[in-house]
Image (cartoon, rainbow, N blue to C red):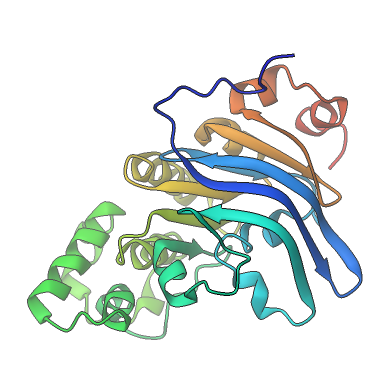
Length: 261
């Protein structure tokens, strides 16, 4: 038996997760999750509804701790620190590990203020520097040309696809290491979905992306590796092309071929 995934020396891990368990009260929602997420890759998290995908992704920036009754054990190692250790600075962690949600959630502020929000929270006050950050972030999500003449108008006036790209711009304005995306295209039309997928492929040059998706074709199109979750367990994790063409576990095969889910 060799390693499940050949790992060249050049690959750098971002998260090293070991024996992660999570309870909602007495209900065990994640069971012995054990895998490594790599730098400058898109890692897809797939599985049927209620399998623990969104719960898992919210452990990576400890957002899950906002829910009463949540308890975790094991290790989520990030930058040589186990995040389940009490001494983690949550503001710093969430600067480095940004999050984009299922439904675009721009603040009821101007386009400019949405993107400048994070840098301002972290102490950036210089107008010239904020202007640079806003322009760079909007260019990076291919939104600048669409909104540059209305930066001071409400973000709520943008289309759904534009709002989601704005939320990604807001997430990258603080220059995070990791972008977590929880079903980022599930509320979007096909054209906006393609734009977000193309954007993710572009962003992985500079960021590591973890994407929960219920869309199997999306996982196959954009991700480097795929983790298949079922009933709170990690069933299989491997290179995406292997998961979709020659999975090791019958349950994975049944799911990716549409026999259930």
